[in-house]
Image 1 (cartoon, rainbow, N blue to C red):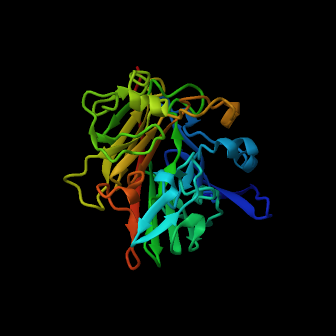
Image 2 (image 1 turned 30 degrees about the vertical axis):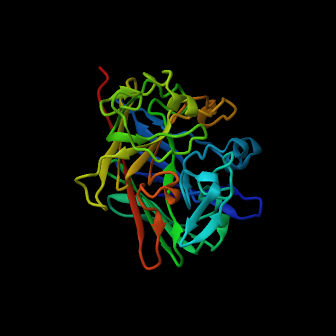
Image 3 (image 1 turned 30 degrees about the horizontal axis):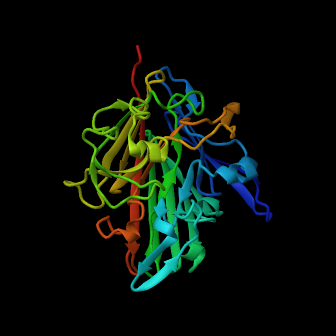
Length: 361
């Protein structure tokens, strides 16, 4: 565990970056600005380390006008509500609430100043077989339009078993929607070096939530069978991404929530949501979670105007985001899993990222 200066915010507050390394040489860099995973280096099939997430080497790049205009949320913690809420509105206990509309007419990823843009309190730790960082933030009543004061704690733990465990906790003093997630973009060939279209993806999902032209879920749960959204068997991400399908046209690729198969699992049980692997590097990422859904986003909006690690230009499909979550717009969809946190109850969610390799010979 090492702590180093990462830069300074415009108001003068100092930002640090935390470097975690496990016994297998996996190297993770996290900053408490936005709870952001800045860098994640893992070995390929021959033991060569390379960065597998999109990001920048300096804080100034995350604060730059160019990045803020695009705001792809590279590696950030997302809250209070990950994904979209229709027109930034919901009604709770008979009272209407209005949130920031920062995605056209919709609310996205917590609003104009979501959890990705706050400076979290950080407490690093180290044990015999793991190290990590505990991040804490108190979101005041009315922040971005949300009701209630929300106390949030997120723990990143890197283990010697090549797992990155992310635990989310929250408490509130008023009923409020909560949907926390992590927004890293993965490229298992090395961040930005090539597209993720040849990555093979498996999803433990028989249904997805289709969207309208504005990427807002319609409320339907649609079977993936017979559609370009069927990843029940390992399939290259790019194999069907250009098919003439209205859902793919709306998102210019994949930007959809998949309904995970949890019928036999308890609410706090981690189940495999996705497996992703790259044919050239031999790197494998398995995502397991307690969440009911996972958003698959194929970086459709990246346009080559951001330059990240090693001078790599981040173009369309440069990474794949796998955001474990409750469903988008759940406060307005009674048939979606509930996202309202009540006073006196604990919000807890866990996602586990498991890293491995296979021989490409």
